[in-house]
Each structure stands twice: as C-alpha cells, then as structure tokens.
Amino acid sequence: MPDALDVLQTRRSIAAIALGGPGPSAQEIETLLTIASRVPDHGKLVPWRFIVFEGEARHAAGDIIAGIFRSDHPEATAEQIEYERGRLARAPLVVAVVSRAAPHVKIPEWEQILSAGAAAMNLVIAAHALGFAANWTTQWFAYDRRVLDALGLEPHERIAGFVHIGRPMRPAEERPRPPLSEIVTKYCR
Image (cartoon, rainbow, N blue to C red; front, side):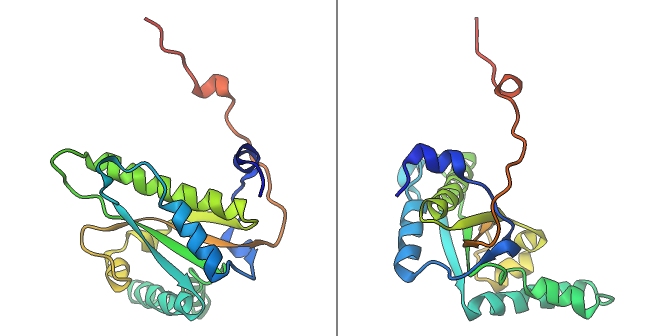
C-alpha cells in the first residue's frame, strides 16, 4: 500500500464517465466504507450514512432520475433522457454520502455537515489508496426532493455527494492549484 503522503499528493479526480471496471470487491467496499466512517464526529452523532449503488441498482436509481427529469422536461429528447438514466451507471460503484445533520443542543449543524464532507473525502482518498479512482459529484438530482425521497432519504437528510468509484480508463490530469501565497495568511497581533 502506498504511503499516506504519497496517496494524498497523487490523488486526482477522474470524470465518472472515465471510470471502468472491475469495481471494488465486497471486501474492498467494506474497507472503503470503514475508512470513510473514520472521521471527526463531535458528540459521536454519526451525522451521515452511506447508500451503495452497484450492479443493477445503479440502473434502477437511474430510472428514478430519468423519470423525474422527463416529467420536468416533456420536450426532452430520448438521448437526454438516456443521459439522465445513466447518471449513476457511469462507474461500477457509486456511494451516496448522506448528511443526517440535525439540530442538537450542543453540536452545531455546521459541524455535522462538515463531518459528512469529511466522510466523502475519506472515501475518495481510500479509493485512491486501493488503486481505484473516484469522482465526488452532486448534480441537480442531489438537490431534488422527489429524487431524495425515492432513494429513501428522510426529510431532514441531504446528499453530501455521490462518489463514483472505478478503475481509471485514462491517466489523471493535473490541474492548476492555487499558490500557497494566495491562500495562506499568518495571524499576527
């Protein structure tokens, strides 16, 4: 297994459409989700959960997305509807990271939301460490309550991201990163 700093320095996002199979095995999925759940969690609230989409489940969820898209866009072409149907079928594995943030007497919701984001990022990094590539997206359907309800989310739950995981079909491209001089300040009194 690569060392931790190498994993962090070499991780790159690969478009979901460029992720092929084979996807992670059942044991690898368990490892990915175990690592994803090892994040800061003030108050041990577990303010997130995961929904795993693999195999035909990706297509069943895509049918839901396509149906809602079609109802909102009756003028949509067959190609557009098929594009929407394929939203969760581009990679062999998709994991929805669901934020369960809720009001709490001691723990701010903001901290709970950040914990869900940390879970998504741990999942992305774990995928890279296991030799896969990942892409963390949301897209319109992550914010559509009808889709969320159909996928089994509770009324207070939201999608922090859909993490697409597979084998990279092309090398990852480097993108410009901001120079530290532009994003770092030192506090001085």
